[in-house]
Length: 264
Image (cartoon, rainbow, N blue to C red):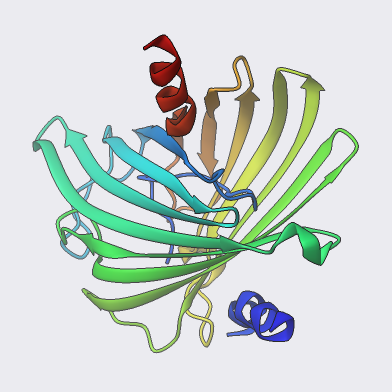
């Protein structure tokens, strides 16, 4: 059984690009059983495209607001839901799509030298705001804490089922995070986001989407999570400047029920 689960986790490493709606490098732990995380992903494109490309509206001065709700089903399995919205001055506020995301983590009893989990995200979005109307991503997640340093790799694979273009092979979109715990309440680091194109035909460097974010993770309260920082495009095909903020709130329903019972 253990061999088959390891195969399930590692196959995508050898087999969709993350857009500005959800700019995040995922850590390996899943949500605690019985807990729900409510997150708001806010990303503003300060320097972006002014042109309609393949039917997709310009990204310049777009505000992306994504609601993410994740619930811990078991000790190592969670289920997430996304609602994507977009605001641009010329086109107003629009709901543009939804995704669902199951994720499973390697059990602690395996005693692996690294954290390991696998996320599968699938859903729809409007072709006015994305070149893919129905797509899926497989995101292996590998991370490790070394003293005050934290290293994380998400070698993501994107599959397009319908859209403007349909690649012959999955697209490779690696995401990497390196951070340092400057204090018990704050970590500082960098996040890299890439979309290198289909595995059988990588994009030329100027045509590949690559961005680097300088971020701070704040741990001001165990119930809250904050990730904030500016991002800079490394190629001409990438939005030049994006500011992102992830604000999350954990709710543990069992404790709330227990407290309610005690008060009675």
